[in-house]
Amino acid sequence: MSTATPTRPRYRTRIAATLTALALPLAALTALASPAQAAPAEAAPSATATYTKKSDWGTGFEGSWTVKNTGTTTLSSWTVEWDFPTGTKAGSAWDATLTSSGNHYTAKNLSWNGTLSPGASVTFGFNGTGAGNPSGCKLNGGSCDGGSQPGDTAPTAPGTPVASDIKDTSAKLTWTAATDDKGVKNYDVLRDGKAVATVTGLTYTDNALTKGTSYSYAIQARDTADQTGPASGSVTVKTTGDSGPGPQPGDQVKLGYFANWGVYGRNYHVKNLVTSGSAAKITHINYAFGNVQGGKCTIGDSFADYDKAYTADQSVDGVADTWDQPLRGSFNQLRKLKAKYPHIKVIWSFGGWTWSGGFGQAAQNPAAFADSCYKLVEDPRWADVFDGIDIDWEYPNACGLTCDSSGPAALGNLASALRTKFGANNLVTAAISADGSDGGKLDLADYGTAAKSFDWYNVMTYDFFGAWDAKGPTAPHSPLTSYAGIPKAGFNSADAIAKLKAKGVPAKKLLLGIGFYGRGWTGVTQKEPGGTATGPAAGTYEQGIEDYKVLKNSCPSNGTVAGTAYAHCGTNWWSYDTPATIQSKMAWSKGQGLGGAFFWEFSGDTANGELVSAIDSGLK
Image (cartoon, rainbow, N blue to C red; front, side, top):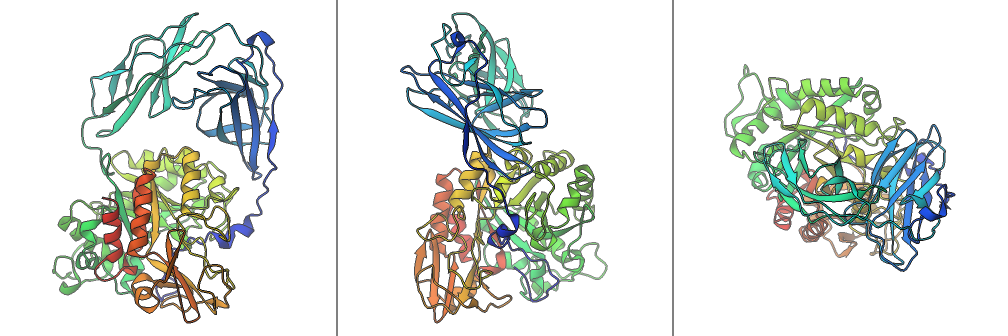
C-alpha cells in the first residue's frame, strides 16, 4: 500500500503477478523403489518403502518416501536408509528425523507416526539439491520392496521420563529401561516430537532451552539391530524465568503494521492507535519499513522515523516536541506509546515490496548484514524503542519485485545470522509468502529450517488475486479456503498454512495475515465471483485498492465466499474482510493451533478500530 507520494515504499505481496516469471519445471511424479542390498533374511516385516521426487525447480527438489505395511501384523517402528551420489544432498525434512553420514542418509519415525497397522502407510519428505536418485534402500535393515519376517523384535517403550533440576535454560530427565530380546543399545530423547539426543544411559540433561517456555519430552529405545520401539509417555517441562520478548506460552500474538509513510498523505500517526482504542487490543507493532541497501540495513525515511516534530495535539502524551530534543518523529511517539501501554512490543521491519531487492546481496554475507541491522536497531538514540527485527524479503530464491537466485538455504542463513547477533532476548521474525501452489514460492526456499531461528512467520495470506489481472476473473484477494472456480489452486490461507506445517514449521510460529483493505475491479456485471472486468476500480491512493474504512460505506458487502466478503456496487466489484469474516478467520486460526494473527495496516481501519477489535475478541 502507498501514499500519494510515489517514492514511498509500498507493501504489496502480489503473488499471482510473478508466477509466470518463475517458469518452474515440475517433475512428473515418478515412484522409485530402489533395489535391495540386504539378504532376504533381514527383510522388513512385510513392508515397503517407495521414493518419489515430487518436484524439481532446477536448483533443488522435493523428495518423499512412503512406508507401507503390506503384512498382517502391526509395524511398531520404521527406519529408512539410502545413499545419494556425490553432488546430491538432502536438507530439511518433515515427519521424520533425518540424519546423514557422508552420502548415507537415515530417516526414523517420529513419536507419533511409527506404528503402522496392516495396510497403513506414512509419508515423510525433505528438500534436497542435486540431480541424483537414491540407491541402496533399506527398510528396518532389510529390503525396501518387502520380504520375510525377521527374527528380531523391536524394544518395548521406556518408562515415562521424570523431570528434575529445572532451570532457566536446562532440565534433567530420567526414565526406566526398556526391554528387548537382543538388548537395548541406546535411547532417543524426543523434545516436542523431534530427537534432540541419543544416549546410552537412563538420564539426559537438555541445556539448549529457552527460559519461561514449555516443552514436551518422550523417550524411544533402539535395540542392537537399530530398531526403534514405541515412544514412552510424555512429560511437560516448563523452564523457569521470563521467556523474553515473545508471547508467553498460550498467548496469542495480535500484531499490526504501522507504515512510516502514513504520516504524510494519510495523516495517520502513532497517537491514532490510542484514540481508536487499538493500542489496548494489540500485543506487537511492526514498524515498516527500514531499507536494505548494499547488503545492509539502512534508514527508510529519516524525517518520518526520527526527525518530524510533533505538536502537543498530535503527540501520544500531549507534550509537543522541542527543536533540540535528541529524538523526534514516529520513533519518539512509539517510545511514548510503550510508556503508556507497556505490554506492547515494537519490531522494526526491513524490506517490503519496494525495498526487498537488497536481500540477495545481504544473503552473500549474512553475518555482515546481521551486524549492520543490529547496529541500526540498537542505535543508542532509539534502542529502547525496539524489541527486535523483522525481515520482509519478497521473495527468497523466487521472483517478486526482482528475481532472486540465492538458493533455498539463503533465508535460513540470514535468519541464523540475525538470531546469533540479536540473541535470545530480541524477537527475530519474517513476513513470508502464502503461495501454497505446487512448485510455488513456498517450495523454493527452505522455510522449515529457517523457522528454527525465527520467533514466528507473518504469513501474508492476502493479495492472492487482484486487478493486476485487469480483465479478471473477479476473486476474493484473501480467501481462507479454496472454493469452486478459484482461479489458482493453492492460492488460499488453508493451503499455505498446511504446506508450511508439512515443511516442519510449528503451528505456533505461524500468524494468519489479514488485510485492512479491499481489492477491486470495474466494468463488472456479475455479482458473484468469477466475472469479467475492464480494469482496476478507482481507489483513494492507488487503482484497484481501497481501505476498509471507505469500502464499508461506499460499497457494503453483499456476499461471502471462502470466508471473505465481497461486494458488487454499480460496475465495481470488491473483496475485503469485515468484522464478521475476521471473527471466523480467528476461530479457524485457533482451531489450527496458530500463534495468532497480524494485519496490514492500522490506517485502513475505522476511527474506532472495528477490525482490530474483531481480531482481539476473536483470539480470546
